[in-house]
Length: 313
Image 1 (cartoon, rainbow, N blue to C red):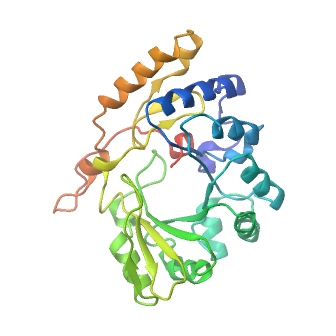
Image 2 (tube, rainbow, N blue to C red):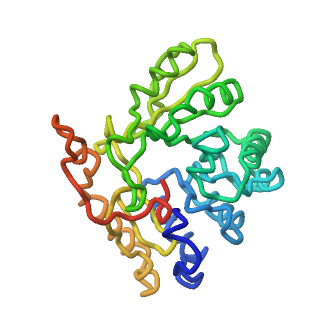
Image 3 (tube, rainbow, N blue to C red):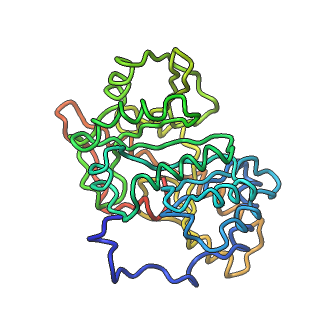
């Protein structure tokens, strides 16, 4: 969240505008009835939310929900917090880290947390014994691609899964263009030139990351290539904002307000039908349409998109 946009004086939502735990519980129950099995809490920074562990505990026991995960920047991930997250029901944790070189890390993140604190949070996550700890690195050409191999060297054999994400045009403020995209093929080429790799099969339909493992058995990596190899046709993810809007695409310009159905007292069955109708009628193909034509020009521009900090990755 760039400081020049979201700095002092920015009109953030009041807590009264956010979904309550009871409202989230009701919606998750409805989504579970529609077939949702995995829930991820993201942000923004979810560890800032009051009573987060209580909310996780509520979600984790809802019938049909098999997996509750979280994405964090790890700045608040103390050993005690990591243990409490696991005890509350978190199975998997993703941690955002785009560089190991201090000045590159500071340039990208603009947050007042030392890099060592983030690395300490990652160690705490690994020691807590989550089923999976994944480190997400968004790669920007000319910014942090030089840290690809240092990241691999640092996390290889650690038990964490390093995932590389192509720089995407999410939101409206990250100054994206194709010249800043360091593609999946280049990422894999850099790594495999030093550490021999072999492909792994996907684990489930709609998996966004292509998986590779080190031939010497020191773990695996994932590469998410929504720019050079878009996967709109397999997407099975819905996103719910903190104030109750349903988004059917990461690049959507608007969502469907579900909170108004809750406030109006609509029965759960009617809410289920409305959500089902939204999902069945979706036609999101932004990544497929955005891909550049042979002349290198972007084929589609969407003037206003929701920010990733608003609905998560």
